[in-house]
Image (tube, rainbow, N blue to C red; front, side, top):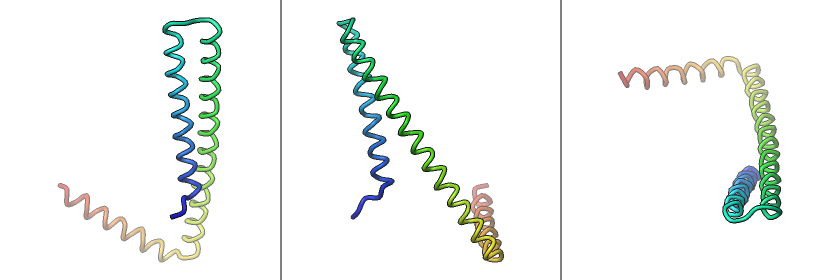
Length: 105
């Protein structure tokens, strides 16, 4: 089975956060017994990892926003092309939700 780009992106995001956690743990270990140059180097590495993860999150947020807008456009196009079908679907979903929520009382 071929992996989608979304799966690869999620895996990369997870890997980025694992790197941040590993760097943070290294920072904690380094600050317990030592100070000076080594601590500064580890802190710089942690800061780079956090910035990379944040940049990746911004990219993912932008991609998600673009996909959401495209889905909204597609839905709008469908409703404009098939108004009665959209009304039927909405009524069916409303009826189903009404039956489900009425059965819980």
